[in-house]
Figure 1 (cartoon, rainbow, N blue to C red):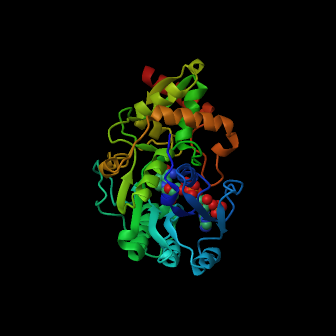
Figure 2: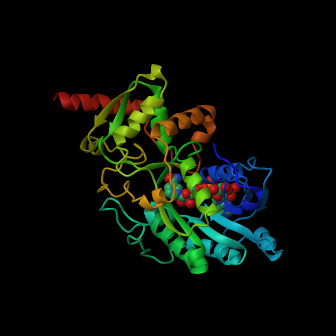
Figure 3: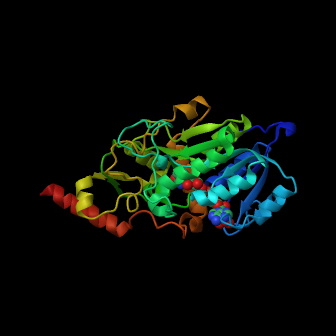
Length: 351
Ligand SMILES: NC(=O)c1ccc[n+]([C@@H]2O[C@H](COP(=O)([O-])OP(=O)(O)OC[C@H]3O[C@@H](n4cnc5c(N)ncnc54)[C@H](OP(=O)(O)O)[C@@H]3O)[C@@H](O)[C@H]2O)c1
């Protein structure tokens, strides 16, 4: 149970975003602690949320007038949280506008910023990806290098007043990608479930609510710096994750898990990550093993994956229309394709 701060310690926090997934949990965590929240977004994603809060409307790329007006009127926030920054040119606009209007600028980046993933336990000071085309704004193609460039924009303006958070895979209720949710729902459907590749492969996921709790505490403690925020290293294998999903499933589902080799799946043109989410057959061990000691030393607490799976299943059942987002390609394979692959896998093994 979160106990709120004394009202004289309540922070004023401005959030770019705040209505889809991580941002939504951040707003809820801030409000639960008694902080005052202002939202800046376009009013497209779930505008019915948080109507009790101050809402500044605008497109963060070039249409920051509502925010500029507030800044010119002398508004000041203890912190800004930038939850939807993907392009350095755009992040530069909000950072420059808020230079003297916020105490701290928190940029939500990603562990994808690192230049390479060949080694496990990537620390925060590992080399970062650089754009091969400095003018690129291709977020799908250059996501990690663009996030790294956004971090630099924030550092240029805010220096030690910046806080950069690099999450690993974020999971839990309201996840618009359907990736973790695929496994939770699949396990709950019961029967024989196809699992990809190596059961011992590391998987590092962080519940959006645990991430939000760390972020709020870090702001309360006025922390600066750069932090990886992900699940425990070595604490979760793919097998552990799927077992947690099965534990969260209704007992009647009686799901069994059949591991199918990466070679077989490649031969059958099953696409890693999208068709079988969280499966990274070409990973050398670095993508899901970010070093999180710095976050743990500053209070990160991660809940067991089974708890996240249980809550994600309950959310998915209560909000079927929210599970699939138009902005993300559908994650997972159909039951028909799964059954066919399993039948062929059995035949191949019998030969
Ligand atoms: N999912 C993962 O596994 C993962 C992993 C690592 C890092 N991350 C990072 O974590 C963050 C996740 O964000 P989220 O989507 O969950 O955040 P969110 O704050 O819950 O949702 C995105 C918000 O941004 C607003 N927005 C989008 N484009 C905008 C624009 N052009 N101008 C103004 N507002 C805009 C949306 O509202 P409107 O549509 O109404 O404008 C919405 O409120 C991202 O920065 C992502 O890179 C995610």
